[in-house]
Image 1 (cartoon, rainbow, N blue to C red):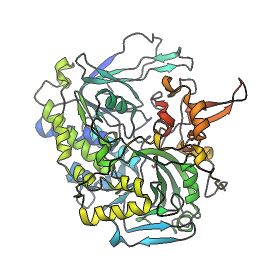
Image 2 (spheres, rainbow, N blue to C red):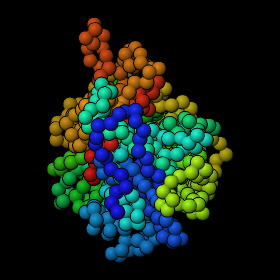
Image 3 (cartoon, rainbow, N blue to C red):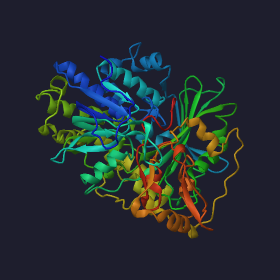
Image 4 (tube, one colour):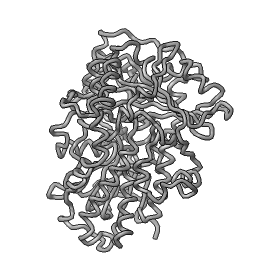
Length: 593
């Protein structure tokens, strides 16, 4: 058998037609949602003696290369996906993960929540915490390794998985329905001229195309705009999560230890409105995952999330966990924080949105992998029911114009599932922090979790996007951050090497200033907001340098540094950056994230 398609390098014209391949279901994104959907589809095929062709593509060089998460993992959906692997013993999915990926899923044994001042801390008793913050029965693990394991389970069931293929364009039928995607052309120079290595992208067609790109996916955003999927919904709001993984001496490792914090350095008082906090997890045998999440609706353009993260590590309650250790990995990724009110319409003719592409993360619970897996399962079940009676592409080898239907059953299934119940209960909590600061947000979250259980008859509406929340620099003073010591804290570019990010130098930049906003960087971002993109980007992509044309500054985009966090497309003034995919395989090379 072997792969149905592969990169073939040859001299060809940029205008010639693309080759195409048809599938019953095409899944864009090899994260937990996309892989769970592919597995569930093939499970249903086996149970019903059907043969639907299922293909997963991912822009990373391998599955898991672009996956970054905290991650304390709620196994609820995993047990639903693999009931035969949910009983304790050698057949448990955690044992299979260890055997195949040499990666531990460590049961949570100690769970604490601290409020930090600059020198001390106060522990909130677990009894006062919302139930959704309790981690009994959860696991500390590497989500990138879990996705690699899920990909092996999918391939064993007959799913075709192709990393290194970046979906650059959504394809539509004449009737307006989604027909699939086109991968990016490769071998184009910075000047836009094809090189000798040029090859045309592929068109991948499908009866149903699932978009599971994660938060702020480029195809997803175009679909939301094309089908007006946010009509009647609140705008999505995001956070930037910045993470390191450390190896520590085994004698100081505490496998199963979970710690979350609020307070210093992001919040110094009860009325501070920066939404964010930190996590610190000990994973067997001797790994410590640490990170800070900062809500991107912050106002101060001088705030630097990366520097806040480095400063946080110097707190006595944090640094003691890292002493004698070595940082082995670094990365960052945006996450959805809008919750229930910001979930768009999930379906459209020919496809659906899954996982974090739709925005199923529970910001109070600080988890989204379980809802992503569940959404993938529900989408797969709806697709199988809709496609099982027609002639499979696996048998006919072609699509017909009438194949593209809308899976309204998927939207309905999500609304009847525990995804909806979980997100609805905390639907107003993020906006409570935005309106009343950390003190009011904590009080409201406690009220929603312990008393109303989500039954409050009102909605705290969120308006505007995160870029519009940035205020002019004249309202603030620049923030002075301590110099890195190279042992506990690191300068950004040195740390960036630990992400392993790579892009071919001689290709057009995938980070493009939108033509309608060509004057925004130098005349608005720099002048009014003191160039916040130089600070919010966790990869040093954006800098202003002296112009050769005079005494002015001009923007330089170091696209080769990009770690695909998508922050710039969200927080840049007027959202002036259009984030497009680079050549497949580019970007970070996460191994234990």
